[in-house]
Image (cartoon, rainbow, N blue to C red; front, side, top):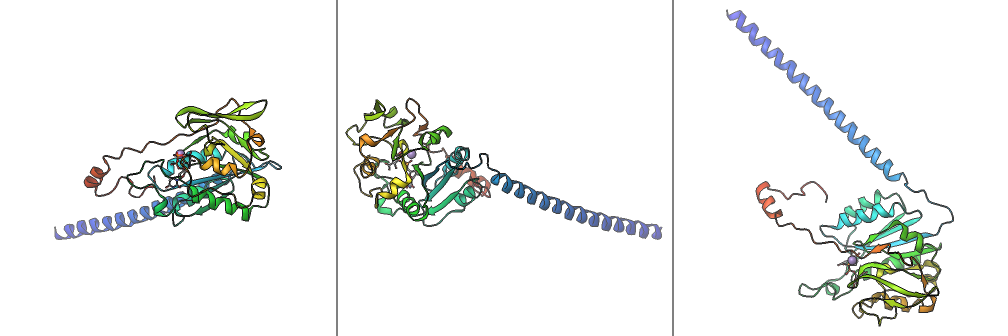
Length: 308
Ligand code: UGA
Ligand code: MN
């Protein structure tokens, strides 16, 4: 009887040792599979990023697209929307300038996966230049230092010719827009949708020349266009030394003051006539009224361990 019990205990023991051993083996195997698969996923991701959806085309002028950006909940969504459009445009060089004292990994990762040339810069807007808590959102110009840094970078680092375009991170861009501005000789101007209190702001064109501006607001501005409404030839820009955006400027006059330093009305090249290819969309602030409650219940924010 005792013997049988011993044998049983021994059997159970052996069985558990076998089971534990087997489980450990299976666990290590599983771990290896996971490791292997995540490596493969990473490799695939890297390759996919490098796979150019549009190859670069020889002889086609490069468009240098300048995007100021700052950290907020919707930042990644905004930049991904832009990235999805820009990756379809051949010969586009994306310059992202963060309004930050450091280069964040969010932007770094985004540009790492961008299949075209890109440049990552940063400069923090000092507190006194930012909108104060009780001030209206339109009281101070935004993205000024960031665009100016990109302009100095272009002056110093790009000897080749090309075209520059300012693409704020919250607008919506059609891929076709870039073909309209690609052959800009001095400064081209184009319609912009959903801006300045009207459905469309556009240059008034007569006989192929700009003769004024169809706008809802600020028609007295010499160049009544939004930041998204013009492009500049890079060579031409570089010939105009010292041209940049003013830090202190009458509200709504940033673009006009900038263009005044570069061209006259008669010299403007109207493009995209009769077509809106860029929209001055502004992203709604997301409703996060349950985030605190989520944290209280779960001990963690909903974005714990995941980038949004
Ligand atoms: C309008 C124009 O479309 C902008 O080109 C112009 O810069 C702005 O007015 C102005 O008055 O300065 P709006 O939609 O009101 O645009 O401006 P935002 O989109 O909020 O800001 C323009 C750009 O600056 C964006 O790319 C944004 O990411 C960036 N920004 C904004 C910063 O880099 N830092 C900030 O603190 C705020
Ligand atoms: Mn905007």
